[in-house]
Length: 279
Ligand code: GLN
Image (cartoon, rainbow, N blue to C red; front, side, top):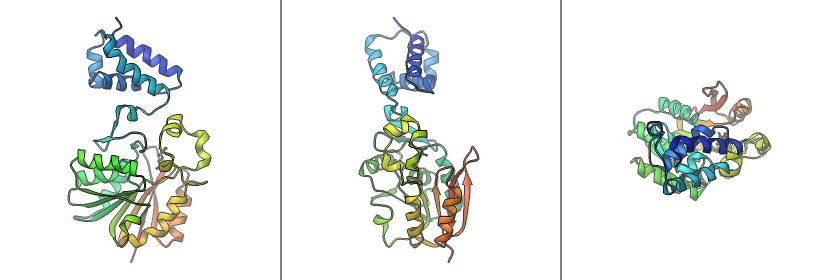
C-alpha cells in the first residue's frame, strides 16, 4: 500500500506536469484537507498507509487542481487577516496584499466611525475590519448575488455585525454618508489576459477582475461618485493594479479629491490610492 509520503510525491509530480508551480505545497494542503488533518500532521504520519477509501477524495482534489482550479476553491476556504473565509466559484480569492488596505483604513477610522466596503466579494475587508474594531459601523455592498451569499456566510461564521447590501457600486446606500470607503474593485485591464495565470483567468469571476481596456473604468466611476457618500474629511482607499498609480491619482485629482496618495504593497509596487473629501 502507498504511504502518505508516496502519495505526496506522486501527486506533486502529477501537478508539476500539469503546469502547477506551487505543486508540493498545494498537494500538502489538498491531502491534509482530504484526510481532515492539519498540514503539519502529514509530516508526523509520513509512513501511514492509505487505503482506497482514503485515496478517492485525494484523487478528486488533485484532479481539480490539475485543471488549475485555485486550491482555496477546492478546500472551500481561505485565510485573510487571521480569519477564515468561505470561498468558491463566483467570488475572488482574498489576496494577502489587501490586508495593507485594511490596516491603513483602520488607522484612519476613529471610535464609532462608519465605513463602507464597496465590491465586498467574500466580505473579507468588511469582516476583518469589524472583527478588529467592534466599535465601527460597517456596511458591505456588491453587485453579484453569488458573491453576497459568501459575504453573508462569512459575516455569520465570523460572528460580526456587518450590514450586507446588494447593488451596483453605491446603488444600495443612496443618501447615506460614511467616514471611510474601502474598496477592492475590479481593476485588471482586459489587455492583461495573456500575462495572467490560468488559475485566475479560467476560474475566478471576470466580473470581479476586469474593468475595461485600461482596467480603470470602475475606479473612474468610484472617483466621480464617491465624495457624495463621504462625510466632510472622510477618506476613500482603493486597491489598484501596480501600473495604475499615476493614472489613478490623476483621476482622483481631476474629480476634486484632496491629497490623493499612492500606497505600495510589500514588494514596493504601487497598489492603493488614498484620497480625502475635504470640506
Ligand atoms: N489582485 C487581483 C489579481 O491579481 C485582481 C483583483 C481585482 O481586480 N480586484 O488578479
